[in-house]
Length: 353
Image (cartoon, rainbow, N blue to C red; front, side):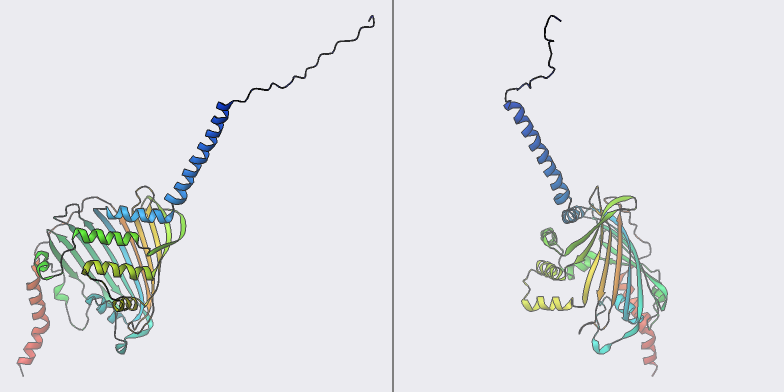
């Protein structure tokens, strides 16, 4: 039309260049640094503060603050030691260490089982209380030996049940409570473990590396409580060092190199110790402990075997009720009765000649 050119309109817009904003750039950098810092803290929490080693150390600290608890457990022993000698040694408390010249081992494995339960309460240090029950059985000895202990008002009470025949009859002692005044035994016994020594021992245990965590397992419930579950092994050299240090604290002396070597030699039969730990996720208290140990024959130990122990803990920091048993006899009277029942017939026979 009339030679006019059509007018074209471009929709393309030129980019708007805004001036450099130092405040906004600083805000972005600060935000990035904050994210990195928070991420680092979170990672540090989970990988350091929440590491198995740290949780174990915190558990030790928490357990040292516990004033009362209840526990149940069992011990299973398989040994080449004969059942009778195994039971006799356990009752006599000699640690089942035999002279190799008096070898009583057998080719078959004897089985030894202990079920136990108890409670402890030290909320009032002037009147600590405790309960302990034990049922012991050996595969080829009939019956189950029972022991019950109670401690209250600085007096120990004990009661024996189902005592097996070990060459002499002790059935007359069954269900007879015996009392031992710990105040009297303290005068002639070992000195009391003073608070300063307790603190020193706690420090030794805290800095020791006896327990080595080897594996982290899935969270598991123990009696309804969510727990961290770890496998561990015992470092025998660290254990020897810890025992030596505690011995020096208790005896107020420094062990010689020879004494330390003797201690190491006494533990030579313990080939390996491993187990499991179950630690509460919320309160970091110990709820279950398993131990497996292999014992090998040595020059001083004339038997071999396996030991398994499992203990569960509950009712932390709750009062423990302990009743004084009625009809308890003083220890001296009990020993006099025991002496007359065992040796009385023998003395009578000798007098008849």
